[in-house]
Length: 355
Image 1 (cartoon, rainbow, N blue to C red):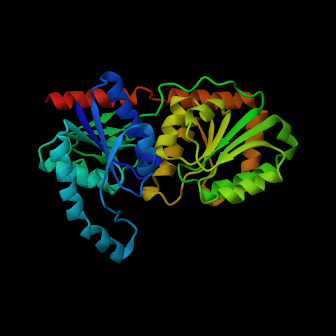
Image 2 (cartoon, rainbow, N blue to C red):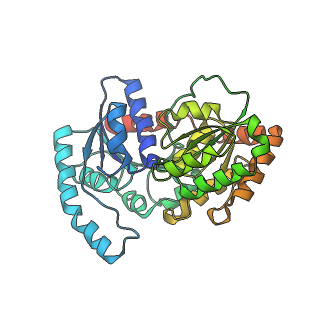
Image 3 (cartoon, rainbow, N blue to C red):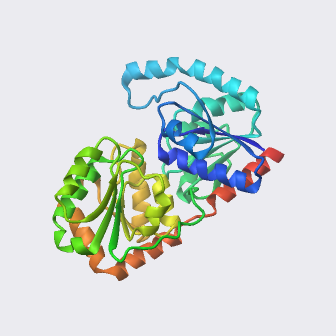
């Protein structure tokens, strides 16, 4: 089996693709995997560490960049399409899977022009314009939510859930302290970073009973690291966490954005969370993701415009004090989990390849 996984840009697009790639390799170690992305995306830094080959396209997004940005993006489409056709001719894939992100569109379009079997993975409840457009031509649309089906009229939709990076969390020695994990996605989130530090200033009476792991992103790392010097908490502050499964395993409560991959991981591993949806996400999809969990009692949501250190501290204190409530939230999250998502997608891709 030879598979192209196209897209990336952020961890939300790339990490589900990694989960699918590993499932292909688990089934058959001889499977050949090729990722196609951009030099600007997280894939350019991360995939070499993961042992996967990456080809890159020079392609830019179109939405929200104004007329000049739109023209600039459109002028790059022919070159990206030609490059995609060359990649297909050289690699000869049995199946192409679009992960979302800028490289996904040209690669899937080239695949259909060459008569390849193609599929897309839609991680969010509300799909973006590109996936809604591509769905008309691909052979399968894999969705994380049943509610997404209505956005793809006439398409071959399979609700699989969103693939997660690990079959199970690492076995770690849990701290006796209440463990907080805070992150804002692979690039960090300034609003969450500074609100969380302000919240800790209001929780110093609990400092001896809490420990913190804080992924800041590179931009805020120095400022947040300095802020912790004045705080009496046991804390690990880092710009990026490579072994995310280990910190998930430690965490009692997580404060984070509501990207599709994050939500899938929270539910697959049954983790209680306070979600702060990124307000500028295309089509406000993070709010839809967070709302879906909150409606099932599987997470708490604070809108970005309402986020303050005072409000966040009150939520964290409440969950610290009421462990039964925290456990119910974690249980509700686990009930929504779909740990078999990657396996279902691989099953469908094998069926497509067989025709």
